[in-house]
Image 1: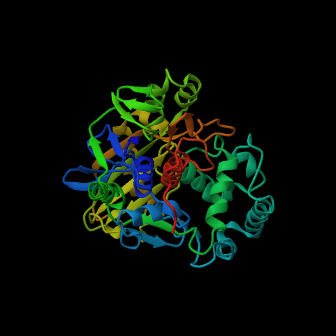
Image 2: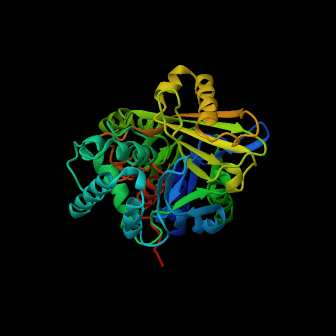
Image 3: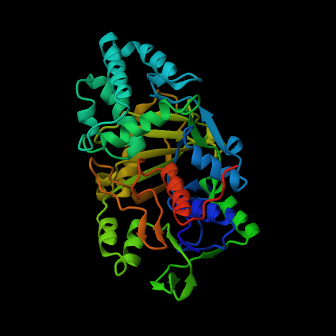
Length: 425
């Protein structure tokens, strides 16, 4: 079989297909695997093309890492879920079962007042009683109508932008509730943050490439597929015959390849709209934040919602990743403008003395098609394109937003759809 694309979905598809005993070739248009979650180098420092976080409920991703020889315990730093701000305010869950930890954390938020705390717990109880389901046309802001503004600003909006990369006014409430369900009702540790303690390449793409070599999976780097043709019950990929093809490339590339094969599927894939993410890397030698991940109060002129202390995560000391999700406006204004705004935000958001000197700009990474716009009622293309032709990726129809877990599950499912899923011990 052929797998077109070596992002996390393509890696998952290829690994599960090979474990089922099938010959696999992977075609990746970039020089290295990883897709939108890969490592880069800037100013002599190993960085990522954007800051990613995982949670304990990402069971398929953790399983895939183990399958290719990557140890999640060594490569990911596990912390209880926390959305804490520089002033020490925010929500921090304790270790253990997520539901009672969430209740305790909400009740401990003295700055919210009793009415706000009880309103949030009442909303959460109604969501749980309804099976974390709602009308498909509902957005997150409508779902949370009646919650005090402070709860929406301090908790709902940051959670929504972190999980869906879409503002609450435009984000799908149905998908948001699915994320909450998996985090809070998947057992102890499900809501934990899993923060990369190594470059993204070391988490999966590089171990997977080594696993491919050891398992006889041929990885074609820098190989953009030009043409896909049906042939004798199978498919030809640039003239080479395969019994099945899994399209694990971007939705745009998949639509291009399928335009003459499945026009309606290609139209649906091409119709997706995207939200960018901009990551501004600042450097300040001798600086260290109180937490590896800190939430920030974003405003029109202070755009970052989170900052990560890479030194506290095993990376370069004094390097900090400021993340601007839903960054379309800042992409239009220009990356230099975004970097200048983040530098000003960094100095104003933290207490005097946090930075021994003014933070310097190290690098700006802009992923202009970071995630699809996860809007209410969005019709995502199905996994099946045609007989023996399947699509895999975080954009394919499913319950999850555009996350690493969504991509991995989609790749695993595409292999299963093609009859190539390995038996789970």
